[in-house]
Image (cartoon, rainbow, N blue to C red):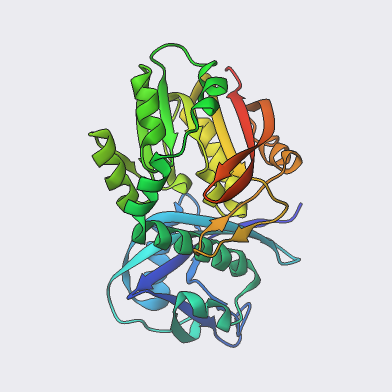
Length: 325
C-alpha cells in the first residue's frame, strides 16, 4: 500500500482575491501553483499545521477558519490527502521561501495558472461553494419569500413516520425556515441551521427564534438528533465533499435516527444561470453515494416530479437510518 501524506492547505482571501503561490525551482512540483501549507507533523492538527507552516513559509500570522474540503491525489510514489481551510491573514508581509512568485486571483481568474494536481479539485470545490454562497447572500430575502410559498407537506410523512412524538430534528440547510416551522407546529423540537448568514437572518425573522449559522462541511454534533431533514440543501455541496458530509450527518444522529436527503435528478453536476452549483443524482448514483457510509442503512430511495417556478423538476430522495449501536 502506498504511503499517504496528510497535508493542510490555506485558502487565503483578501479583498475578494484568492492567494496562490508558485513552487520554486528545485523543489517537488516546481513551477506549479498551489494553496500554501504543508505536511502535518505527528500529533498535529491541520489547523496547527497551517499556523506553523504559513509562519515558516511566508512569514505571516494567520487565523484558521472553516474547513473547505479535501482532495486525494495519487502522485505515483505517494498519495497526498490535501485538506483545505479558509485562512485569515492577520499580520506580516508575505515573504517567498519555498515559492518564487505569488498572485492574488479573482474567482474568475483561478484557471489562469497551472495548479498542482492535488489542488485542482480544491479550486473547483471552492469556486462551487463561493458562487453558491454569493447568490444566497445577495438574494436572501427574495429566495426566502419564494420558497415559503412552496408546498412540500407530503414529503414530511415518510420522514416523520420514523420519529417519536417530540423528537429532536436538525433542519440542515433550513433556508426560509418553512420546514422548521411545520415541524415545530407538529410538536417536534427543531434545531434550524443554515450555511448563509443572510438566509439564517430571514429564517430567524420568520420563526421568531435563533438559527444556527454553520456549514455542512464543519457540522460537529454527536448523537444529538433523532432526525436530520436535508431537503434540497446538500445538493449544493461539491461532489467530492459529499461522502465526508454524510459521515458527519451520520454522527449527528442518535442510534436508529433517520435522515431525509433530496437532490435534483441528473447524471452530472451543473451550474445554473444564477451561479449556483448543483450535485445531481439518479437513484443508482445516490444509492452508490450512501452505501459506503458505515453507519447508514437505506430505508428507501425514490424519485418524483414536482412543479418548480414555470416548469417541473425531477427529484431523487433517500430515507436512511443510522445503524443501532
